[in-house]
Image (cartoon, rainbow, N blue to C red):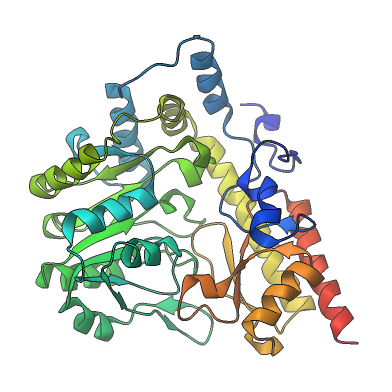
Length: 395
């Protein structure tokens, strides 16, 4: 592999490619005069093997209905074993067009309107939609924030919430607070859920983005009993920047749970899949590991820079410890700005397009989520803009 294949410093112009991150700025943030660091996709070229696989398939001039070959499932089985130490079987894997659709399908397939579904805010906002838009009862087991900005699960509250719930939507690793839940935490959560016959939908889309020095643990890998109460959602989309190819997988070891989920997939006629997403997934899992290892080191460098910059230049802005993902969870509460003022400050003054913390529910007030999966020069420019904007209003 040549060094230039892993050139994460390369600036790639994404405008006029129907990129939601760039071409959707005016619609979403009201201006395109910001550095887009909001939606969670990366500004890096995909692994070379992925591009080659897509181009090779595109050279055939017919893009008709397709099916997933054994190589699709085998690539996932190998990846989960090698990368996460989880030995799964081909038969456990069900295709799904995305992790968010999988959350909604699980809510629809395993609960009835009015029944309780647990989430743990602050959390990725589609979790709320999966509950509210499907007319289920939202039970918020809000995370507890420690003095250093680390978040932990409130297990006392979870025990109470579990008594009136049918389903728990878990973010593992957690978006947006960056936790890679450890074995003790996951085991305790799993035991509470099994004791209450509570099914867990574990969104593990960021599993491969666990940062150096940390280790992702699939919830279902802990025991057969916990696995029998777990639906695991994975995808190469965040890992390899394939969000536009709508390809993910749902791993379910329990036959009855798997059968019910498959029925929901079939009822919506979503099982056919995406031809190019399939090719990209196989290539990424089979040939993308060295690229991923280099990527994680690069992202860690961006995170380290951000932490040092804030400590030196903007000590009034906090930053939660990040164990996984490429998303910073920045704490602006000491600045004295309310949520509306903070959102306008980031867009109109700093000209940095971030996600407002309030969209992640209770506990997100006063925070901003910032995506640093981009060339280091862009991260530097963004933080300089934030610093200069604060310098202006402090005069």
